[in-house]
Image (cartoon, rainbow, N blue to C red; front, side, top):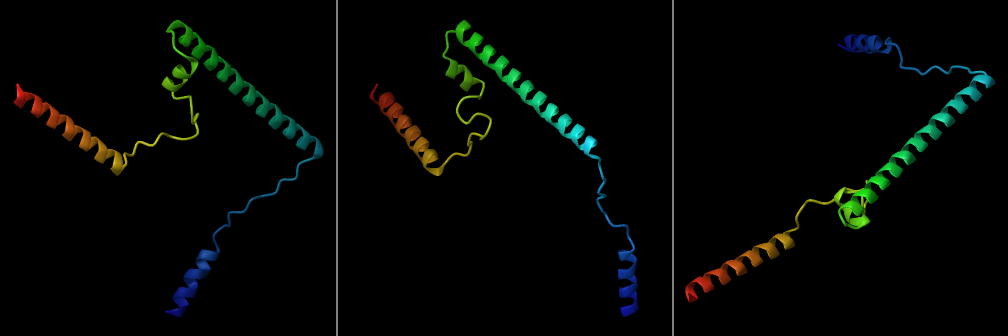
Length: 118
């Protein structure tokens, strides 16, 4: 039994290791890679800035055309407070559910009283 266990372990150790190879890059190639990364990052930031500028222009056009405030249009597009970072909590609390239930009971009681008084 011990031999089988050890043989199994030996077999597993013969698998090729997942090793990362360190590729030696010349200084000129490093500079080229650094410049390529810098330019790619710059293009990405510029593209994002252009997109936000277009969105801002569109929001201002919509707000002028429909006589709404800039913030109202932003909120309608879900871009106002908590801008793209947090999601709105959809979970109702027990207290709010209880308050809603009480208000509906009171309104039903009022309607019943109005019907009975007529």
